[in-house]
Image (cartoon, rainbow, N blue to C red; front, side, top):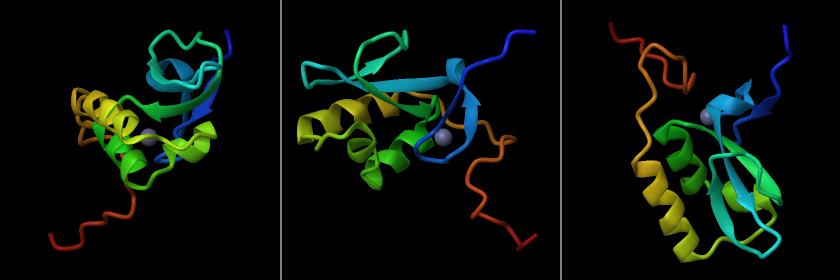
Length: 104
Ligand SMILES: [Zn+2]
């Protein structure tokens, strides 16, 4: 069996196969772009293909440092627009473990 390349989601810190993650790349031209192919040159950061990880990463401003770039408002808006069209994380997948429901 071929070993899958694995990457860490910068929001939830889960280590997942690269192919299920979305890559954001800081290109040599200094632009921030979502890289669906995973082949663009530049410094990349990986996030789950779910909206919650993207919004968490945007909210906590962890994308910029991961890419060694200060994101502009336009770049934030662009990434947030991308996040909004991503699906919600399926409920059966353990996402944020800090949300423990005790009241049932
Ligand atoms: Zn994640």
